[in-house]
Length: 295
Image (tube, rainbow, N blue to C red; front, side):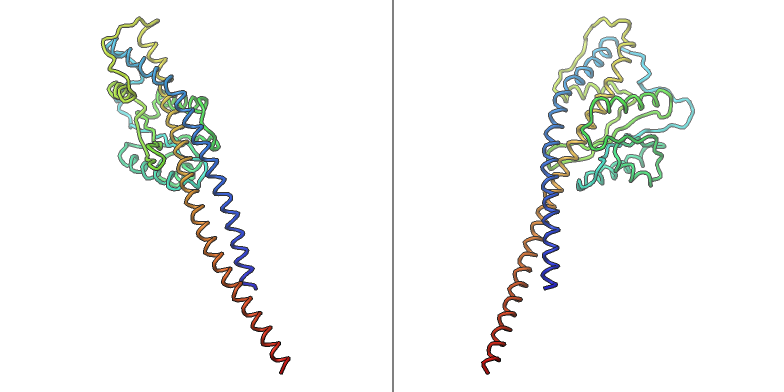
């Protein structure tokens, strides 16, 4: 009987865990759909800003801007790495893949400095040899433009002040619901060729020989667009990582549910066999007792 009671308790615990994993799967599904819709709604706005920046560069020729590559000043150069992770676990290898990618990237950069987004990333890199400049956390909520603005303002201010010479961002790109891979791109300094390549990849045509009048000047308009462009990159990376996290959590919870169901089936068989053995033993004892009374 004690064995049967232990089995019942284990089955009860597994059923409760199964309810949690299925609920988390459904929640992640809803969050993933919402995140994809949000990204699709805001993407045209930032694509238009990107095209406007290239219009200025292609029409005005050389544009003097503080956001382009600056000549070295003789000081030690530093590279900032913006790392986007999650605030919660239970997402399979989502965060572990980012950690490996960031470690490989930092080994190739000169004096890397980390700007972390997500509590899980902070818990991991606080024990690493790399210096952490700042940590942002949004409590597992869908990132909004205010979050991206806060991060972009910090990065731009530190870059212009001279804290670092270049900025990279590492996030998770969702190629499909089953293919989630870490991605890396350089935010600063700006590269005109990369901007044009991004426009071409997004479906835009090559924009050359365009002439516009900019007031007060091309440089002033360009410098005003760059913060919006950087905010768009950060926002897209945040939302892309968010939907990737939800997709990874869906897969992890689905596998956990399958494992729980298999364990429950195995325990149910074990419970039935033990119960049947107990009933058989009780029946045998009753028959033996009845036969002894007759004798």
